[in-house]
Image (cartoon, rainbow, N blue to C red; front, side):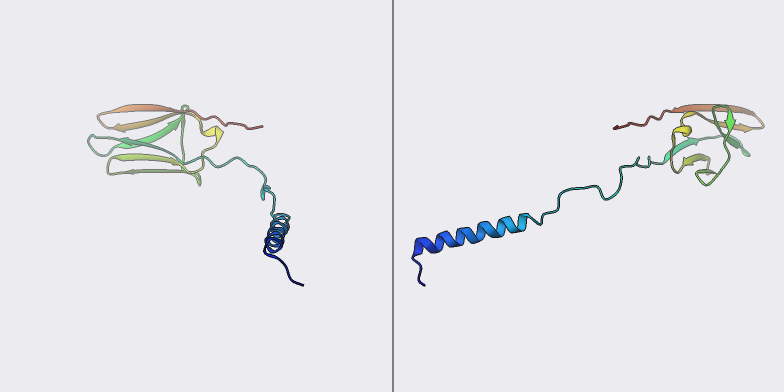
Amino acid sequence: MTFSAPQKNTEHRLLILWLLLFMCSFVEPPSFSKEFEQAEVSVAVFQCTVKGSAPITLTWVKDKNIITQSDNIKMTFENNIGTLQIAAVEMNNGGKYSCEIENEAGSQKFAKHLSLCWVSTT
């Protein structure tokens, strides 16, 4: 069987069209591989730089309660820099944070407010 040039072009076009349709039938539609969940919020870090005669005692306070170190909360006081780090911020971490310093000559307090809000998409 012999084909003329126009007939070959038509067959090539049909073959290409068939291949495109065949390939498109195996294209996977988008889907979620995991349920939507709240992303973890970044780390919260407070720092205060102090000066004065040693020894200086530094205390971190949240809403009038002394903060203690835990798996989620790390505190350091080195080279006159006090750092409070909350590793995984949660809603209950919002509030008024104070850095309170003291030595034999007196005391000072500096406070900042950490405001948090979650955005719901439902």
